[in-house]
Length: 350
Image (cartoon, rainbow, N blue to C red; front, side, top):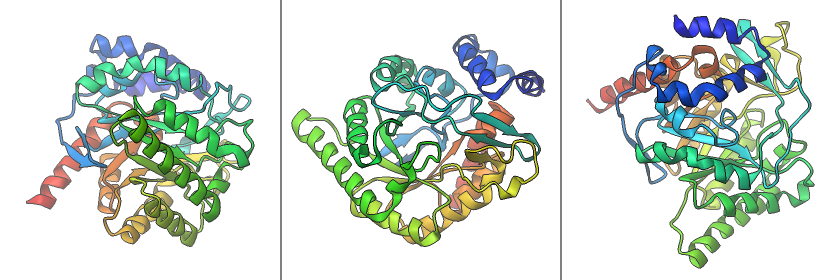
């Protein structure tokens, strides 16, 4: 009831304004324990994925904490992992405002943010916000991308810079080649550019390990749901071939046909939330079936309830990420999903 009241106020604001209000107040809310009025701390349900121990299966998808300012606060809400970003080598403002829109009747969100962030160097300074989260066993993912002004033929340079700079702080790195909001970015999912990019990232990781004595850090690759199924599976094969460690399925969709006629349905950008659930889960099941256990898959897209989270696990996910569902349901969704999956896993192991 309390979150419904808060949401009724927040939803009177523009989405980006509401987001900034939440982000500006989240630290003191969690420090004082006021979030416990909305939800309770979920029990531990540890799982090992990519060689990392996650305290539970539920994470915060990239895009919520773009600049790595509130990692421990989100961890206090029950997330087992927090993926920050997408970050780019140089700070950039993103696309012109307004650039985020609610599709309330469908519990959807359309965004064309465009990787707005303070840049890699400042994000890394901000990551003192992750210290308490790490001490509790939380897992930090850093989602990397390219600057809008960087020509697509030079994209590899941006990804290598972000990988090298963030390597020490990240528990895992996510490669974002599937956002629809940076011009030509999704073309990197095609066979030839994907091979070149992932080969470069594999080599850069090896260089860091060999020259700096750094530990091995896993790399996950996030794919779009709008590719043809054959193209998705070809991309998955290349991900395996180039020694990446996981697939994230999926990013937002540019197909708005499921919300046609609803408020904001025709705004340009990626659609997330409940309308994404069916296609992202279809992609997830197809990818996990194709991989046959070679790599784990992290599910992202359309999870609005604990039951939805279990559906993702049944489709083969190893971890599940929330974004739009968290906006519509609040912190109680985190605990609901952790507990639903814990019950499901217990039944599977009975």
